[in-house]
Image (spheres, rainbow, N blue to C red):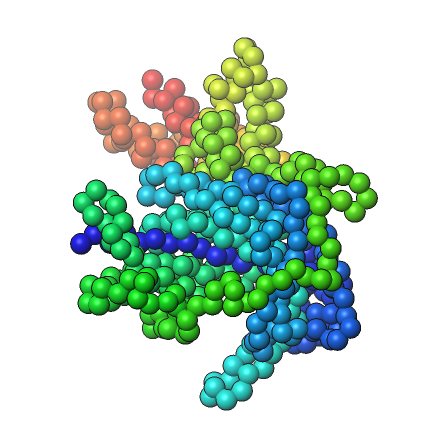
Length: 512
């Protein structure tokens, strides 16, 4: 029996507008005391009227364009009717049959393959409040600060086939939201939440569907790891149930199960509602939206499209083509928008230096191809292996780092020219990180600029040669590795300030 997992996702993305979806309340209520960023509108008081947040609409369209969606000419809001303690009006203003974005897709790289995941729709709605249940299960407290927050729901087609696919899709989607700068997209803080619909298809030898297990909606997955684990568990559970009962979609309704991350299991909660259960009807207090037209208070789709920045996938391709960076380093850089921008500024500074100071002949492009790869490789190694270590230890972002891209590029110039050794370079970087000072000034202030001068270095080399006749004799007999012992002794005398390349060069001249 061959069973194929079929997975579709419903992702809620909290937009970081300044105000809520239909009222002027502060949208940062998660940082405020409970029930303090509320008003009669978002708490559903009688006689109040919603006013649409234009920026939330524009940001949803922006996300749709980034995800290759079609933007219809008209869209509208609807009432989704259901009762729950966290829903102050007794209904939710959402979108049903005319969402803002339709029929898009997102390509992901998963398990060495490029996979195209279709997006059915993206619609905009208001969020519910937040429940806090007592440990004894007797009481529930409700914080309405979150009620009315703009919430964008992205619904995929069931095109995902493995838990890894689902995790990769979510990670790429989160990255796009951050590049668009429309959401913090932090799953652990609830800015991005995911429900997964999953069932299994039994396939024949030709890969044709014979039967399908009942669809299960899995909720309460608040991290990428939890999403992957929940899908893996649910596949095993459904496989076991199907092998024992042979129940199909015809025999059982769609159900909802919650993921228990501590126990590592899904637990049944209820049967799943269908669209007709919500009794959708057009929201009478909000006018329909006319998109793709210009004028006062209009939603100009073309203008919104022009605000979309370079997205992660295009940036990965460009970094590989222009800079020759390894795929692993590209993944790390592009995974942090600010870090990738910082790296690009550093590389731009290095290019200008090479093309104006280092270049001796040929065009700028020729000189960059000749000297650029080494400089870029050095810069990326120091950035990802050394500077980010400091950032992680201090828990700060590259945006708040005291080292400017210009100063970091100057530091890389010094390292590339072998003016200082790696030990001194690390000390310089440490001081730069703490103070933000220029690396050249640090070298002078700390007396690190090359250590001994040439005449002093020559004297030290002469002394080391006299004091170590055996390694000198071994070198002259053809044991070339013996010279590294002498270089080490000289480095000790110069306290690590002199460049090992300069020492070796002078030493070879002396030994001739």
